[in-house]
Image (cartoon, rainbow, N blue to C red; front, top):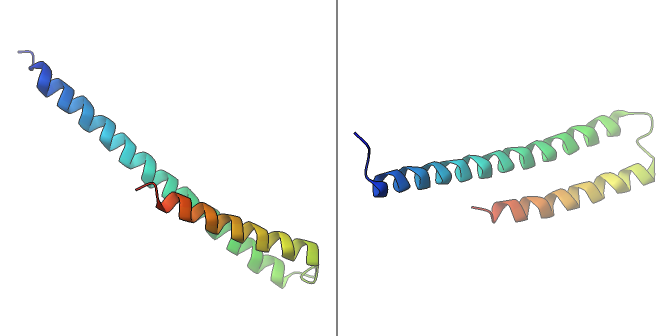
Length: 78
């Protein structure tokens, strides 16, 4: 027996909502992963023989600033 159109539309709408929730969660996870990788890179760099390279230190700081802005924007997606 075929379901009424209203029920079919509810189901489709619910599926789209679930897909959107999954997409937002994935974006949050990816943003967290970006932060983790930057921090891991920074820690590794600080232990290296090139740790006094000001250009790289400056770039790391800029990446963390950008990642912070990205995190703020992603947080607003909810």
